[in-house]
Image 1 (cartoon, helix red, strand yellow):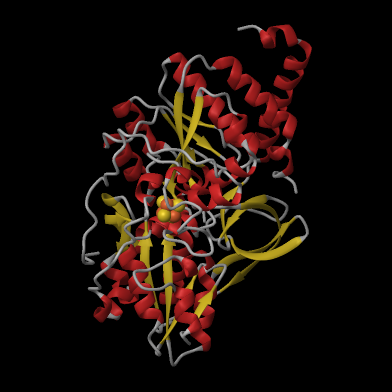
Image 2 (cartoon, protein in one colour):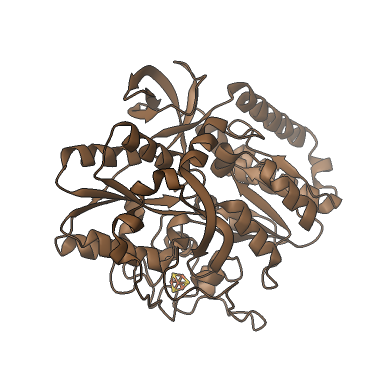
Length: 86
Length: 385
Ligand code: SF4
């Protein structure tokens, strides 16, 4: 139930006084209520749960985490003997 | 898909698992709180790829599973009324009540509909002014803002033929209850990433201090989960107990404050029974007086008291507290299958029993002798919610 899927905001509009948007999930576009994301703009990524954007995805953070993990990968590849050490 | 595929990368996951193997020196039990994480763990085989020292136990974070039987029975009673259109998230339809499930009501001619978003139920209400649309408001803090917004919108748009049967539950009181229980032995927690997206993680700081147990906010993809486990194991091995955030691309310490504000506008905390577990103090939501007109239990007072009957075979309460693994339940895969479930944990797409069945963790284990099933507190016989 708590699954949320990241998608890119492609359009913003207002309906019944609520901030709404269209969100592209890798080709599948759905409507979402973005009322809880006052700062979100077209082009930003959001995580959508039961039709509501609950988070504006921090893309810098996402990139940094991946860079960090890939660095760890290179390190492990270069130092196999260390990796095996107790 | 961007921000999903990168976090499903097999090499990165394996490297993290290697790092866990290099870090761990003794056995640790780590509970992933969220049922969505349980499914991801089993689907990706992380439970089998982790070193033997690290045991993942599955927590109560499946809202469908913990919705008390009395509320399922109330839902069934409401859905059976000719003047009601009962609207729900799809997962709830096959959850067994005392006598039947919501699918059974629909098959018998009841007007039961499934929606993706609670806002859809307002549309149904506008189109059916001669009926009352009752929405089954289940969920954790992740879902509560959406349900709360539906109520606010109903009020703003003057939609009067709309009501909600509320069964929200909240995570921090459940973690406290688990830590207080003498039967539950957990060394560290992976906190649910999307609950924390909404609520932040400051609520866990006093828990970590009081119980000296690490909590790592964790996402849902294999890389996220492996990273959460690694951070938790590192804390345990170093004798540290802190709240750490392994899902910073979505979660901030303070959470989503506009969402919290709307939850607080509509709902207030209350004691709530959890199916199979018992009453956990201040672990649920009920309507604030200003929104009481949307409370389905007040709108239809005749559904207040319904005697419930729980399956005596189902051990889901122990499963939901991480005391038993689903395949340690004697009924698992025998009397109880997804086709004919005895408990909600076999039905829900986030239930641990369903995950074990779907991903073939059939290997039968004996129930350890020292683990006699015991609920945290007895479930009340009659509804007092
Ligand atoms: S396997 Fe079935 S009977 Fe056993 S705990 Fe799970 S849901 Fe209940």
